[in-house]
Image 1: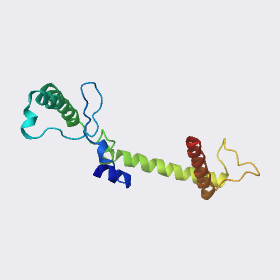
Image 2: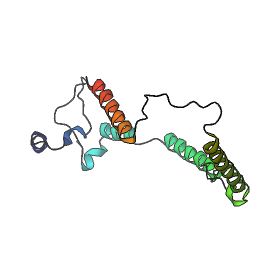
Image 3: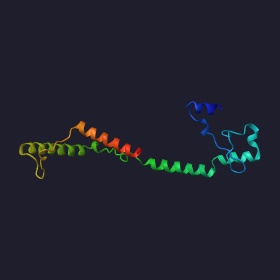
Image 4: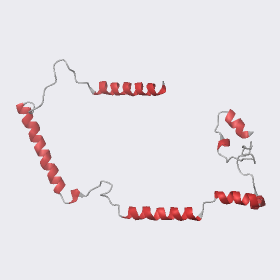
Length: 153
């Protein structure tokens, strides 16, 4: 009754965590959650088989051991390159390439500033306003709200 009172007062429902027990007709026995057998009663013939069913079999244990060995074997060959931590910066080739590309980009920006927009670019039409960060954030929040409301409704 303590579990019922706890649940009535708004506490956690501890009764749902215990195993269910069934009678001969397959109906659940009310109030039979938790252990039913203590001490020597666990060694009774019918009860012993019940607990043996709950124990993992040796085949299942061997399968898990084999799976662990396979995982360990796969992980043995994994290094920093697998996770994307390439050591290209150690020899300096990548850094030199990046410096050259960065200098080229700066030259292109300077040239565009002197000459105007690069070829193929069109200016923003008159009357159009580019939204600021606050406006974009407000729009995204409103869109999320409407999607959530659609899910609930």
